[in-house]
Length: 384
Ligand SMILES: [Fe+2]
Image 1 (cartoon, rainbow, N blue to C red):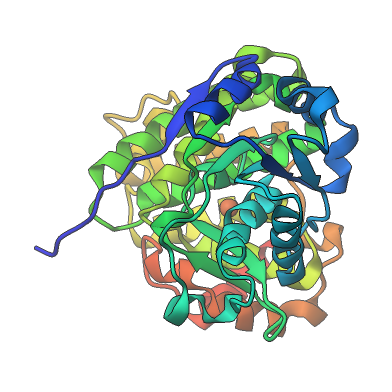
Image 2 (image 1 turned 120 degrees about the vertical axis):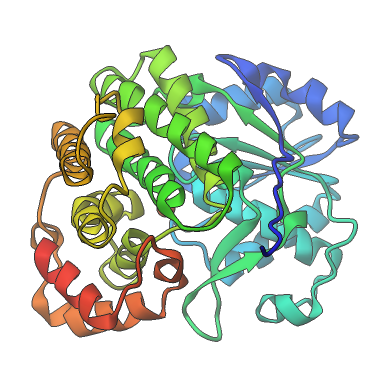
């Protein structure tokens, strides 16, 4: 038996209004001059205003500072600029506020704070991970779970490809999960980000790596999402649903320490080549990916279905899979997430490039069943 590393280390404060604790929490972390890393769109939102109030509106540009240049798909220059702001204002800690992108830039900027001349493309060979300044993650969406992740996805200058910078030291020292910060998220984005979290839970649970702790977390994440996501979609102010979605998104990301599967390999090129929202791309590929896996590994989704609340204990393997996939398909349709890729600007012209990038993507290598280049082509054709 090969050995496996289990790790669940991030301190997390959860609750409506938890953002008000941020000043006290910074003190505990000995951070006196934080740099808030976010994107321009967030500056006018109640989420940013709540953080500004908690840090002291009057102290902005005196005791806390803002870098708001993060792109929707972060690039190397975002990380450079965030680190330059940090040095200019003599900051001593980073707060990432937003969806996955600001959190990823905030995490990675600490590397350049320490060594301004460090080349991110050399991070595997040359990065010095010791003594990074503290990072506090405050998500305003419930999807990527980047707040509890050990990686940062940045498009590098040299390759123009999304590159995963990975190291346990990138982890946040503290996560603040405050559902009040997510109530402004419109239904469409609530649905798409929630579908990302659901896909994380389903793909990590079915990924054939031995990690029963992650499996338990993934199944409970599914249980929370199928209850809370439709409610958060229908009524954005449902604080109970928003809270459960925030926790479930973090659980999905904790669970995918195990790794992901074919659906994420299909989704990644749809974002890089066709600029599709990551959660939407997952949602449109999820059911086809599940059918593909179930046909080759009958019974794979029985416990996923039970986590959804279905009574499948006495069902045959194929009935259990069919019922579960049917349930997920109806759930996605009820969230406005049932469409063909062609309705979102993808066409057969893109097919060869999509297949090539999907095959290069590492996620399908840990899929529940092996995936060939031809399988990827057929899956795209099925959802096109
Ligand atoms: Fe994802």
